[in-house]
Amino acid sequence: VSLIDALADTFPVALALVGEEFFRAMAGIFVRGAPPGSVLLAEYGTGFPDFIAAFEPARSVPYLADVARLEMLRVRAFHAADADPISPEQIARALADPERLPALRATCHPSLSVLRSDYAVASLWAAHQGHGDLAQVDPFVPESALVVRVGLDVQVIALPPGGDALVASLADGLPLGQAAALALAASEDFDLTAQFAMLLRVGALTALTPKETSP
Image 1: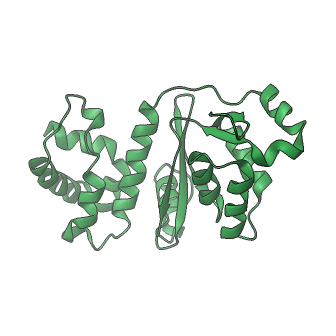
Image 2: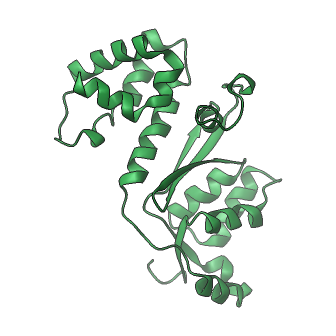
């Protein structure tokens, strides 16, 4: 029962989407086949989203597994290491030499991750937090979600087309110029300035370093 309760705490939106009775029955099957490998219950449930994806009775809610993946990323973000965001002085130095900007590499916050989904995972999650009307959410619209911790607050931010390519490229260590090119290739309407400003605003980046220097 304690393990099922732990899953309910970790995946509250997934629970809300299918109802408590269905969720607890599904979680009970998972628990019996996947005992915890750690005494820390906060770490339990890593394999639950993949279990949901293969769970035949949940096929009628095809977006359930990705919503659970998003919730698992939130847990990981909450427990990730701390890191100071880029200081205004660092940003000013980078902007003072615009010719070098494309060659700079960005270091992402340890809590940062991106989930690409065929479903409206960010909107579904937000609606269950009271942000937006759940009845107006079309779950079958593909979305990408940025997960990052700002202080003690884990944020889920819907990314526009191309935004997932930008953030994933930066996380992979590509220079700003290459990351921007990939984002623009993914969406010709991509607003690079707005997205980079958002990453700075939420503290998603912790350093800007020259290409030849390891972050």
